[in-house]
Length: 494
Image 1 (cartoon, rainbow, N blue to C red):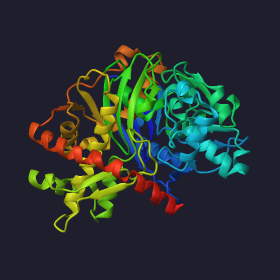
Image 2: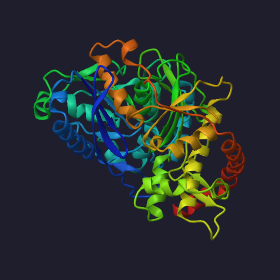
Image 3: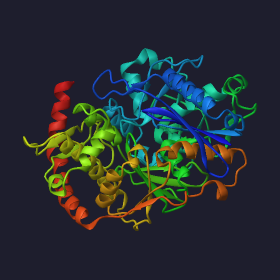
Image 4: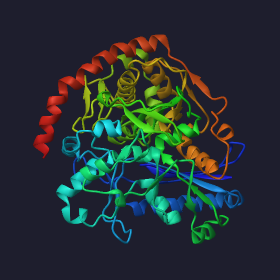
């Protein structure tokens, strides 16, 4: 039995995975995001720990015998967050998260200080990455910056509490802008550009390697055996890839989580920073991946449900499903940039926009517009990633939004690529974390990293695809037209 811990933005999710690949139990506890100022997004690491303890309590009630049989633990987590520790490893301030856009000016500064940044990291400097956050901290909170002795990513702070070890894996470290991604080691040049050194960084390991053992007092309190191995783990998307068996070139997935992601695995490092496509190390040795990211996906559905007074996302999806094809074709267009955007625009100032509103539009129309807008945002990233690339086979579909048949079909018709949704797709990152724990305990990749069997295959519907293509052409005209207004509005709010 193997335990996967996934530290997401909206909650902590745990799975117990059997060697038959059956998920024996699932538990989760919610988290909230704090936005104290425009563009800011923060969480208190102590809240992550409390959520983990609540979820572990649920598992112990559900499946105590399975929990007692756990041999290893794997970690998955939201990427890019900056957890700042002092000399006693105490947290200095709330963690600055992946969808925080305050450090946009520091991105240009970083690339000015270190002109080789893109060549070293393979990535464009973006506000969500960890390195610009530390430049922002040095400028705006210099007293606190002076106290920083270690910087950890979110899941790695959990590891510190679980094992006492400060370590990170290659996939998660790729999103800091401090990693030489091709060489899979920390870059002293990139650290120096931020006023840091190797002494501020945790040790690096592959995601399938052991990083330590669960503390004895935690094992006793949670009902686990002594000596449980904790794996290096992975950033959430690399973990999801391991969870759906996307570990070889051409394999990948589309994720409808808090953010939206398209992920393609590869056996070589293929950076494309000029397209705002991410190029990161995979969670397994000798492999890399490309990824496009939009910052608001399923979170946009949550937002519009709350905005329109709907009691749940599920209820709003039911209402949207009742709209006729003609009504959908007349819905407003929606730019899904509620937290700014990464691929392909790299614009933290971009905002959400409805255009084409009329008196006859209601809640269901806005709900449809948001679903469609997320599809179009992913399509823009897909087009950037596909430049010069052969069309892949069917990709897996994962994330909480993947539970909706309506959204899955809309996404497939919008992308023009078949997608297969496997059972338990919303827990792919936690399953991948458990699989990395399995590998760290001596598992064979050929038996561990399998693609799930079965699942529903969604294929493009020609009539829907034709309408979406026309509406996407209108959608693509909106950002270039509105980008100057986003900048002006940001200046007024400053």
